[in-house]
Structure formats: structure tokens, C-alpha cells
Length: 148
Image 1 (tube, rainbow, N blue to C red):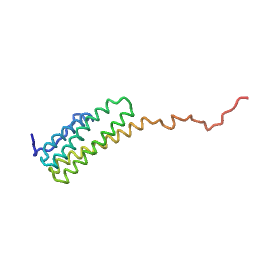
Image 2: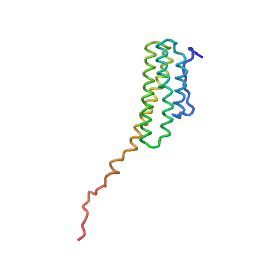
Image 3: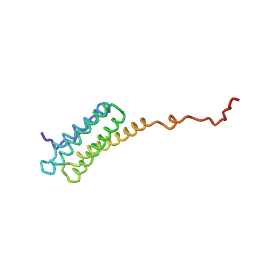
Image 4: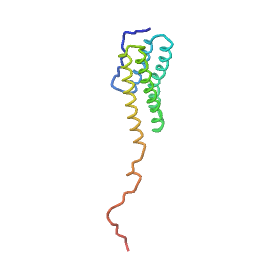
């Protein structure tokens, strides 16, 4: 069922990223249903639908990671998919396939998700690297007396 008059909304109960990515996926699905049934609309809609639903699915997979390295790798996929959504939404706006405000709401959310995921990746990477202080033995600046 198409409803071209309603703007996509993204509600997040409590700000949980797992819920937020799922809400994003649902909003993308509803938005794609409003695109025109032209060849261009169908192709771009299919691409947007795949990328948009992939964001939440891959975030859930990242949450089930067995290691920090796997977590970072899966978050990288989430970043790529959210960025791809932003690209397709920009394309929708430039081709005027939908009202620009409707696409822009989703594009802004995709951009925010990209920023959040990039910050999460950086934090996870920093936690995996040992600090220089923990890998070297501290030396005293004071002379150590030798026993005779």
C-alpha cells in the first residue's frame, strides 16, 4: 500500500542503536513503497531497500560478534551500508523521485548512523591496541645503586 503523503518517521524508544537501526530499516521500507513504479524508481528503490535493511541486520550481527576484531569488521559493513543509503537517497532527491523533505529525513538519519558507527569503530579499535605505557617497562630517572 502506497502512502505518498506521509513523511517517513524514525522513532527510537530510548535511543538504543539496535532499535534505531531497525526503525531506520522500517522507515526505508515504507519510503521505497512511495517511489514511482518506473524503471528508475524500481532499480533505485531496490538498491535503497537492500542497503537500508542491511544496516539493522548487520548491526545485530555485530552485536553477536565473538571478538572485538570481528565486531569492528561487522561495524565496517554497517558503515558502508548506511553510507550507501545516503547515496541512494541523494540520488532520489536529485532525480526528484520523491518529495525532497521525505528523502532528506532518511538521508540525515543515514548520515547520523554513519557518524555513530565510525565513532564506535574508533572506540573499539582504541580499546584493542595496547598503550605504549603498558608495553614498555618504565625506567627510573634516578641512578640505581649497585651492590658490591
